[in-house]
Length: 94
Image 1 (spheres, rainbow, N blue to C red):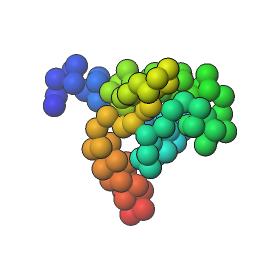
Image 2: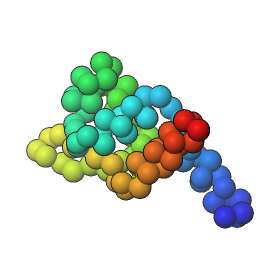
Image 3: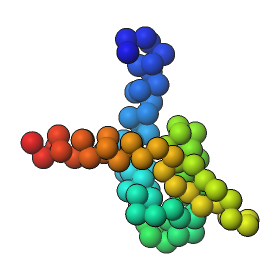
Image 4: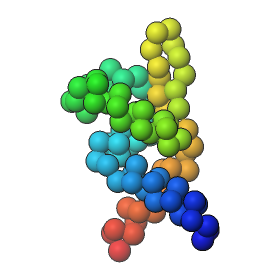
């Protein structure tokens, strides 16, 4: 993975994970899929702030959503993300 484009994409992916709010959303969605209102309530943040972060996570293929009526139910797109987080936690504990 020495190709410059791949390195830039990898770096951008880790920048997405490096934001506290986005990490909290990811860990919350590990428990179960949720809509924006539920996420905002759980994190005690404004819905607009959560929506902004969810858009970033969606753009970087971390989350996806299904529509239920007028609302979007967000979930993690690829469960491998949790293994990446677990490995990072394990590394910090060493």
